[in-house]
Image (cartoon, rainbow, N blue to C red; front, side, top):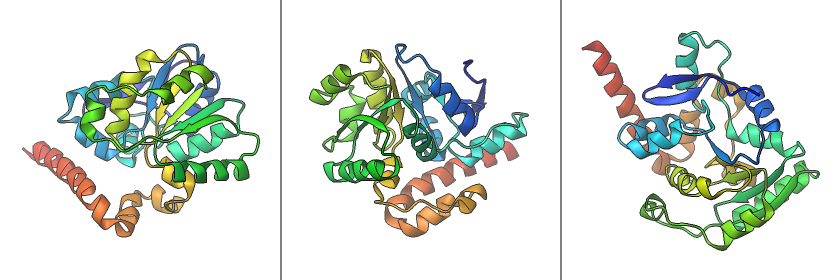
Length: 247
């Protein structure tokens, strides 16, 4: 299947696609050609403006998917009428129902145990080959290209089709960048907070809130301390863009 066309959104080349097309693409992909898939939201787009390495990681992915409404709206304004947001949570659930094999890496043993229970309950036929928690590391550990040990050895031995990486950005992006060249089989997918949704640790916003572009407000109301600084950085980025346009 042909890779979808890309559109440029503030220096990031995002694929003009939607959930159903992404699912079909991965179901037909040749996993003997290792690669990675990323889902940059507005906060990652904003961070990439000052982080050239992060921007390059996004632009070199097999698929860089429109995970936020701003990028999807922008694409449609430029004539890419079929573009809509691609949710890592929805994509993961669709692919768990397929014949592809899976591996989940990241987060804590407790969270992964909850994910295991959720998958066994909702997707009893899912072919999950393993789960591996990762101990907390500072951002510098990932940025320096530090490599995983036994966790990576197991992935190399099992060779799953889809390796779901559940860390915050840009930690997961740096981890994927340093490990993708060592991958012999499969695709790494950086899905961040999807692990919290799969485990039930966080409640996902209703779909109608997401459709009208207010998921960020719903999440901010639930976690103001954690998400306040993140969304403030995004707001400053878009405000700066608007000021430049007015000049």
